[in-house]
Length: 279
Ligand code: NDP
Image (cartoon, rainbow, N blue to C red):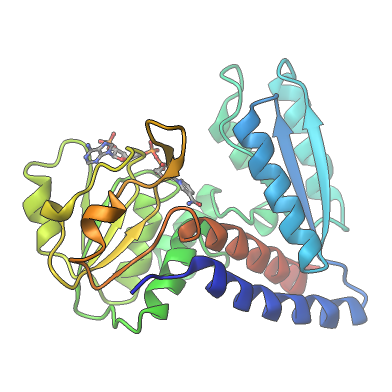
């Protein structure tokens, strides 16, 4: 089974669109502020995609572009302004930031009520204690895709490969909350293949083009590929070698068209939620 992230995300975005209309009728105009520092092309593309997605669901987005040499202080001042702006419901600072800016300091400066990326330690803490307001964007998107396969997570062996704060760790928390038996693996894991091979649900978020082949996958397993890499021909590809895995697994996400669209969809849901709860 091919898990079509575009289709699932379109379905959810249609719902969001309706809810945006309802909120607007109550005088609340959901608005996401997107802050980009520097001229990195990939980041520029991500920001454009987010703006486009907002427009498609009728949500307002405001873009703030700062030059490569912008100081940490300038950025913190902008965030302070956005925190105080009653018309802004979500604040997203596109990562990575230039090296002279302390990323954690910037994330911590965002009002947790507007932290639609769910990166602020307050929101991370709430996620870990099972009382989260916002959903972590990529992992929550993955949960929707697993649901799409009809697979029950409860009691299943779930292996997450990668332990970043953005994907791996929050992913593990969501699977745990859904009563999965969760193993988190990383670059120091011994015998990764055999750990992966026992999984019913496998999530790869390592950032290595076509790293995973059939030797990592139990027949029938659900395989979710979060990776976004370039192959030897500069073509977008995942962490999983799709051609080698597709016939052995039970379900698999393609790259592109799998997890990617879902991440932005969760961002839209979070902005809508912020507008509804705190707007
Ligand atoms: P990071 O680089 O922050 O983390 C990578 C993780 O993978 C680390 O925990 C690292 O282990 C682990 N790892 C690296 N090599 C291996 C290996 N050989 N075996 C086992 N584990 C390994 O990446 P992110 O989590 O930010 O992103 C991962 C991938 O997902 C990237 O391709 C990124 O582009 C993509 N991504 C896609 C999104 C989407 O919307 N589709 C959103 C976010 C990310 P260790 O901790 O030991 O170093």
